[in-house]
Length: 124
Image (cartoon, rainbow, N blue to C red; front, side):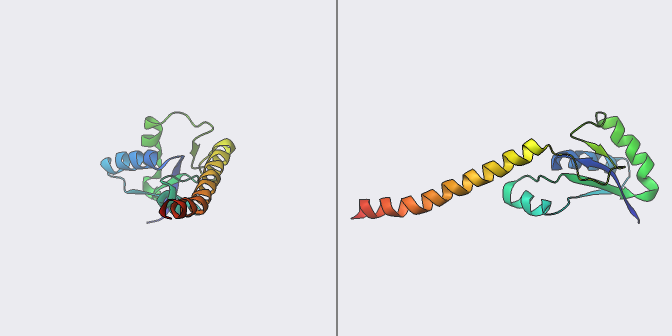
């Protein structure tokens, strides 16, 4: 089996739906993320890197037809297999995610510093 990338999705659930449809048509398929996408998926529940869908080279044309019938035309949020870049995720979304992570880290840092002090005052 020589795997070929046939589509890139911004979200994992999109890839899962397309893979299920391909499997129902008898085309074995799987998804894979770039970079630390799997770790981000575990840690945050989502990944900024998107999911690439792969099928066997002999099934690629049929898989692309099935996917084309299930998706909207490629735009800023979805790319076809011709592109070597990961799934398009807008820069604004990446910055928003980074800001949220920093905010959560700051809140946890403050809580870690304040809660023991308050507990010490209350207990005695």
